[in-house]
Image (cartoon, rainbow over all chains, first blue to last red):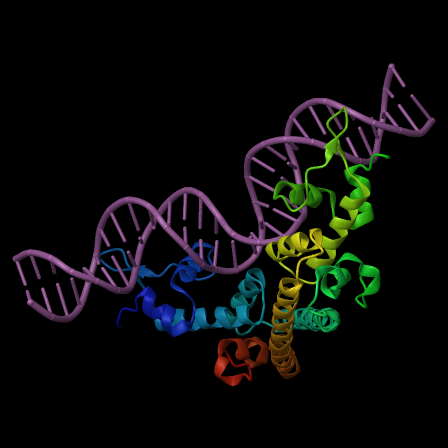
Length: 140
Length: 140
DNA sequence: CTACATCCTCTAGCGACTAGAGGTGCAAGA
DNA sequence: TCTTGCACCTCTAGTCGCTAGAGGATGTAG
């Protein structure tokens, strides 16, 4: 068993070095063994776990959701209902976020198109921001 | 001139009371005058400013961008090139965010569809997270 | 006069890191 | 063997945009 340094683990998993230490500090990954000189020594499985976390973070899962997903992964005989529920909830969030961003996009486009590149007093960017009634964006 | 309390200003602008105080503390709005008993007394113009800020925040502009937009609004004879640039930059951000969320949505849908509602060891949710190579999501 | 809502200041906390200070370990070249 | 220089260590504090709570003062309605 060759020793994997934190730098190597970071490179292979795509998680930054300080972030790896942070994940250890919050108990998302187990504390690895240490070398003589007190340096962290990771194992291949740790890199998989870090990659799992990184990917889940990229998908926008929160740390606590990832914690649950990780405990599920650790016990493959459990029902995957929780994992399914977490992913479904995240899907709903993402869909909602897309809808609201589309509305923002439309509004920003109106602003930018309406800007005659003149003075601020004729500028739709400022105007739309100042008077919400003029815009197409509706609220919760 | 009737005195507008912070609560009233919050209600009319849609910005919460502690947030109004926070905006004052970071200098995004001017400190209003005070009553005998040291309570804030806002003017109608302050409410417009707060509404402007709220709307800009809803559009996802950062506080520093809003600060710039507000100084532009305060001087309507300036060129609106900066306002235009800020809005355009935000538009690009929003478009990119939408694209990446669409990719996430596709990936989450694959995960959820593939989940056979059985054990974790057959669950695509966990599997896709564990092995990024299987998914369609590509990176920067 | 007494409730009670609203206001005040101040500090600390949130999530998920990131940056920096100040120090130690380790491998490779001279 | 020594030294250079990078990678590692711990710890604290900062980021953003608020939000929550403590502990107290003010203002208003009955």
